[in-house]
Image 1 (cartoon, rainbow over the protein chains, first blue to last red):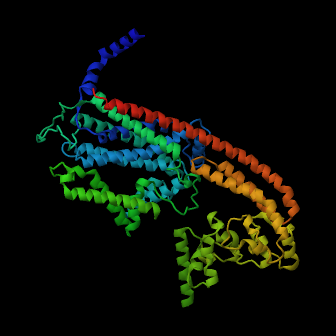
Image 2 (image 1 turned 180 degrees about the horizontal axis):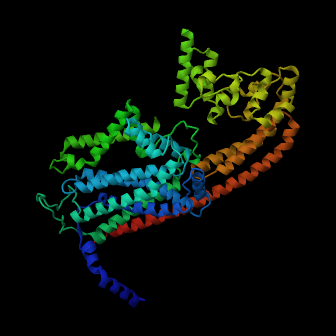
Length: 367
Length: 263
């Protein structure tokens, strides 16, 4: 058995140079000594996406993307398919936790100023991935064809109607008609299982390539070994006095991923209906508008903001401007100082925005 | 002319508002100041009602066109308006067919037919603000408006156990639903049994109620067994995901300790 294993290893070694790959990419690849757990959040989100792909594939084998069957097929998955309930809950809870993980990842990158030169593109691709993640959630929301799915999608797909001319065309394009219907379900299904995964895979590859090509950034505080040389030409950011990626950083990533899974199963065990309110147990009825339809928690702040701004056009435009600032932030922030605590104004704006987001979310929830 | 124009304007406005809100056009006029106070309170009562919660709208009872203000009260579109006192049971019985049959055979129904002054549906249930029926409708205050409470009390006692069972099952189904379990099939079975049980109320026949209650209890006990099985399933799901929680938390702790071990 051992001999056979050695032969297989040698066979691979001769063809792809596995030992050298492990040495250069894992055991001799150095990360900063003061690297913290916030650096693992990207990997945690990646692990979450893998779970979504696997559970999504299992759900796909029983789900029927047609208005007459969608709700019943989801019920069937929950009630009759062996462990169907587990895969569906993992998919639902996982999607929400990914938003948390990606959000925290972006926050930590912002707070540690890791988006600055030469990592502007890494930020841009990462921010685009957050938007793709939210689109994933939005398109997946319609799949169960429940009252909540139907009416939440109706609200969101009608948002572009705030814009003259292009708005109406966009709404028709999204809904495939005058209202949310079977055509919308088909379109969102295609988006959810083909278009978005492909897009995400491309962006993820670019993101990982940029992270490895440029090198991991150092945290701004705590005895940084960061090079202070000006960035006039390309170089890989090395950390010769750092820790090896494996096992040091891999162990950190592993226990954070385990914490992610533990949190996921905690919610499934003790709060299984946390993301499945009562309206999700009622099939969609286009003729009956429920009294209180609210979007998912991560859309509550923009939803409340739209309610507060009296003009829909101004409200939607404002949100597009905010998303654009978020996407292109590294190109707008040109100051050299990379310690957030020393940038009082930016720090103040960040804290105010964060508090504003929390307040709007709570307000949106209980309004 | 001015009156005609203003009427036309109100009707056009009501039609447009109805299209925007999805409410029947009736509401727009009944909510407006031009309506008498006793008619103006109707939309508010209806919005608080069990009918409203179940999508039963003005035109479902009164007929008329709910989408066109000009035809909302047209007899050609089946508008009935307020039924006479004696016509109320037939009016409600368009939907509540089983209840109407039992009511007409009951002492209440016979009294209404004979004297025109017996209790009709509205006497016990009210009209626009109608709430979900339950055993508390049978009470001293209401029944003694016409007769003594003695026989009504005996019937209420006979219904009590079944009513309690229905309430308990409703609570159990709500609990299961809040824990993420699908209970549509059981919910429909309970609704069916409850609806049949409600028709029994309307016979106001103590002996018949006593005789039939056993059958309902048997149906409810069968349903209870199914609900119990769902609770067992829920518990096994919780146990399994709880086990996975412990596995991942355990691996996490071991890896954390390993990461903190100096090398």
